[in-house]
Length: 592
Image (tube, rainbow, N blue to C red):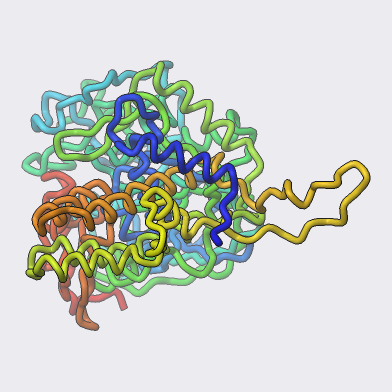
């Protein structure tokens, strides 16, 4: 006998009532349940976050005490201020390189002699290609004047590695000591649990595709980066544009304002959130942390000299070896290095008019103040709230995993078009997916869909034994509540809606009169689910990796059809814009 809590049954009945996810009367959370499900399923996973690269959600993440993290730089002294940290040493090694005088990474001119350490050249909107001149459809303007920020080199950001390489190729350099050709790999350990705000998707990708929307349109809504400081087209000389009238370029704070972004996010953490957030967790070619204070959060494990290299991109480079390290985290960061609170997070998908979808199908955040204000309030409440990550609560990502692992391959198989099944074989294949939920003596489709949809919910655990009855509570054995209330938070509601829609589609497909109609039903389901597993390479040789665009590398074909590669010379380019085409090193020039 199936035991289901009353709250779950009520939630399930509401899901059935709103079975059409596109119904106008449905709430944003219902209309976007598939996107919320995918945000939970892909969080802290390199593969899923790379495909769903425009993150629309923020979570509280905990990095446990003792976790080892890495930082690449030109300096042998420990870092104390705000900087970047990598979870993988290969990521940090890209930045373990020299800072030749006058050309720190991401800066275009030598120092001016007045304490300004050099900044990138600034390009007006008129000097940009049309695709970069376009402004978002929503209103884009700063709500308050920009606060001043520290003008300093920021070493650990992928956005500065390619400009440094191009700069070194374009400008003759004086002879320098051999030891200046490399840098240092810093290894730190976390002093105490770090409480971070995790911004999902490829939130460290410096692109104009929407990867920065959550940061620039929402978090920094009241002090947005300058929209005119976007990078120039590649046809321009990236580093030698004419200076402004006073001979100096306006400050931009790094590639697409990375310096500005880091400083202002950390200022928000200190002031608006009372210091309860230690930094920001993001992803590009590897997961990274903007840590607001290295001094407060880290102990030095060791600082080592990196191997000298003649390549200005650094001893790691963007090599196939680096990509292998990234690919090793396709299914998760691993080692319990990051704990996500899935019971309490903020996603734009639950707010009215907060997300629109561009012609390319990518979600974009609305920049309107009336829309953003309640979202900012919710994020502030999240930052100030007690995290449930350490509590005894369900792992909703694990629940989503069970759903995906059970149905993904079957849906892919039945909709692939490469296998021809007759009507009998197809119906048998579909029925194998749903037969565990059917009582063939007493058919009841509604109950069967309910059984299917609620299979993996923790609330289906039996209740604990009742305590002895008391004089004031003779019937408490009939009033037990389940250990978890699975109907009050965003994640379980989205998962329940998705599983109900999925199960209903399978039962509907089983009833279709023809093979074509059954397959059409499942193809519509597959398109709506949009699971990242559908694009995963099936098998790659031991010397290959499954490649998809992760900023700054890759092309549109790589996004549409990820493939196995053994050299990055096999990949496309231009997915992230024509202005950024990093030189990819051959596999023989590894980062050993």
